[in-house]
Length: 346
Ligand SMILES: Cc1ncc(COP(=O)(O)O)c(C=O)c1O
Image (tube, rainbow, N blue to C red; front, side, top):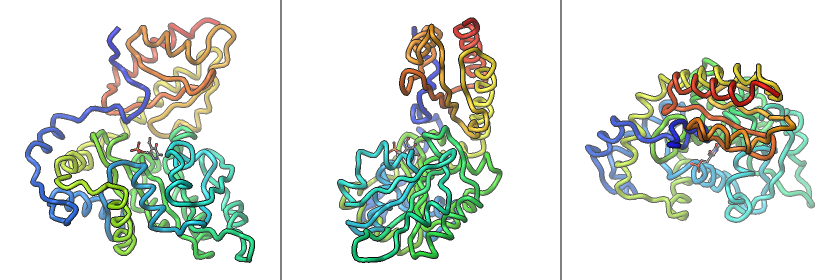
């Protein structure tokens, strides 16, 4: 069976024809020397969209988070984040290995930390305690199922952090999804924080790249760390060109991904053995649990493969579906039909 519908991640999208054309025609130069006009245009556009002074084009979300962490902190300091944060679970321990930070995970609700918990975790300065160097937020929150942090939630944590002289970084890999779902401009979600990373290669559908945005001084430091990490990419305008297309042509259609996720979630909700908190279906992800005697999450994914649907189980009971540009509304309907056929009877 040829897989036609890939629900594993929005990172699976392939570049559009418009992106490929823009890449072929991109004006380029040596970006390490700041001479690539297409990278410069992308950085300027990113800074404008996120309402920050400057931006830096990096290879990936992981590199964006890492250069941000390095630019904000000193080794031996502590970083506070919600316990399911991507930066903690899926970035190969770069926080410890490269930045030399002590990790302080806090419990969260749908990916949001309680500002009171954050305040308590910022230990008072005394001889025995590691100073807090950074607080990291995630919006949308991947492991929570694509849930959004509102402007108010972001402001509340940033107010606590800033009162204690601690900067805040947002891992905003999918910040534009949050902006669409909350109906606020992305710059409002970023405004309370000191820096933000967002990805071009996820729901925006570009092949490569992320942007870090912040003050001019912060971005200059992040640029140094990008070089140290081997992220200086020379004629990177070739890939930045696809990013510019993504910002122009993909942003306006993100709401469609959310509608497709909703359509699938509403179908799942009706099926026996499926446990799904519909309040978490806010953007392009659907996270659910399958609690059935006759079928594990892995078995469900194997059955879906027979319908040309590619999905992966997170463990024996949990599955996450992600909708994206390369899944049409008709594809989403096919997913619903397949789920009904496979799960209708228990
Ligand atoms: C919330 C979040 N942050 C960071 C990343 C890392 O991005 P990359 O895979 O480009 O390194 C991801 C990847 O899925 C993510 O979901």
